[in-house]
Image 1: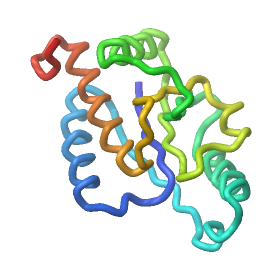
Image 2 (image 1 turned 90 degrees about the vertical axis):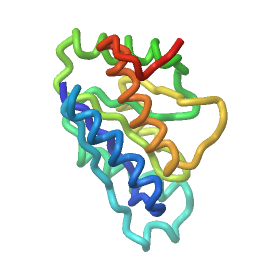
Image 3 (image 1 turned 45 degrees about the vertical axis):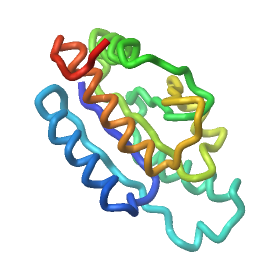
Image 4 (image 1 turned 60 degrees about the vertical axis):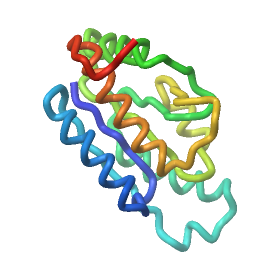
Length: 157
């Protein structure tokens, strides 16, 4: 199974980028993992929040395949413990999902088009984090999930 982390706009802070790179490198031992960034034109950022979400949706839909399992990282999604999330990953692998796409939206969330296309939604917390920080938190949790599945000592309960 391939895993893609699809995100809107570049990560602006180097410490976040460095953290993501550390966990992405570690993930190579467990899964085919990649990140992809959708760059939204600056002119779009001058529009209303709804118009921005609509433009982002067009770019997102162009970046995913019809057979992709699309998982939104969304504050309204289901919360998992780290062990439960590892079970979620295991279930997707066992179901022979070819590509699992986790999507981090822009600062105003997702359009209705994206919510309708999504196969499920996951929340990392009831707290609100910047869409930039979520990238690092998610990649670390994905790495943690794989270490749990392999019975390694990274996760402690």
